[in-house]
Image 1 (cartoon, rainbow, N blue to C red):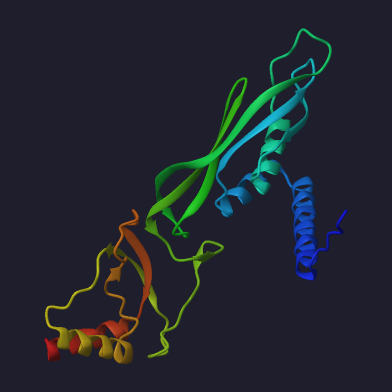
Image 2 (image 1 turned 90 degrees about the vertical axis):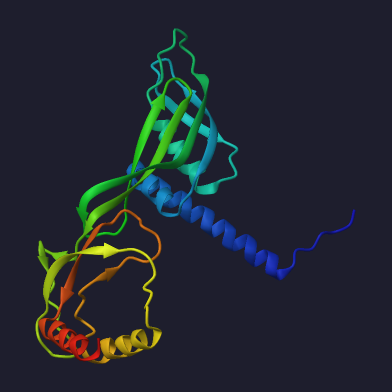
Length: 235
């Protein structure tokens, strides 16, 4: 029988894969189920996991196994299965329940305000006896706030004029900035960077409207005065 040789690179890959699998398993064992589901959402893991759950006479899951090829979801689904309460059985002996755990995108929800452009949450729905749906929801604020420390906006200074900037909430305009006069546009952008970069009189949100309507921003009063003067001279 011919002897099989493993290339050094393959040995390294096998060792790395083994280490990662052991690390993930250790992480799963030491982590609560809510954190595991959030971790699955953070890596955008989605898909369906089919399991066989060993259930005792009282409906308590004893163990869960799956042949799923989605490594992390496999671990999360097994942990979810062990948290479930199945129907009690008339038989004293443990029995096997088939279970599907499906991870998918949930709802895109608009909230009033937040310091994060996007935030995330999840919902679970158990449909006895054989299905659990995990929905990954995304939350978008109508008003995007500046980061706060103990409820207070961090002070920021204008690097041009060395003064403490103020804050205000402005509407967001979506779409590309287009100048009717291209030469004027170039002059404005050059002056903006040099004379009034922190005027922040308007906020552009890019091409795609993601639901955010207003944004809290810093502004320098001197920058705004310089902008007004420049526009009067050059418009």
